[in-house]
Length: 79
Image (cartoon, rainbow, N blue to C red; front, side, top):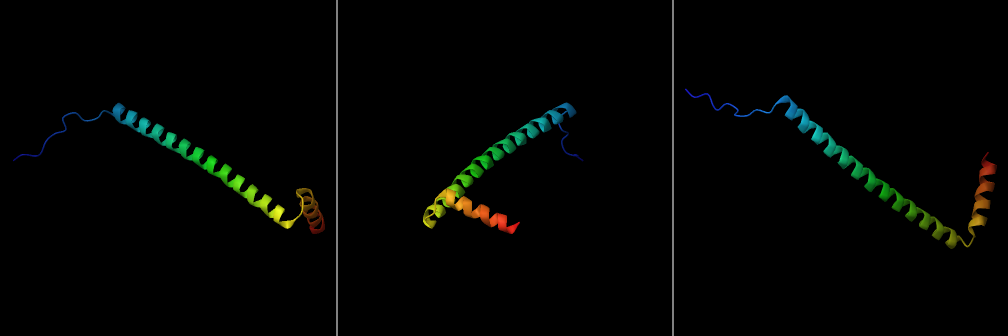
C-alpha cells in the first residue's frame, strides 16, 4: 500500500535560517517606512495645529505678544 511521496529536496537548516533572516530584514524595512510616514504625519499635524492657533489669535484681535503676556500672567497667578 502506498504511503505518499517523500519530500524530494527538503530545506536545510541553513536555508531556513537564511529565509528567516530575509523575512526579518523585510519587516525591518516595513517598520522604517511606517516610522517615516508617521513622522511626516506628525509634522503635518503640528503645522495644522499652529495654523489653527494663529487663526485663533488673529480672531481674538490680540497680537501674539499680547496673548503671550496674558498667558504668562495667568500662569503666574496659578502658581
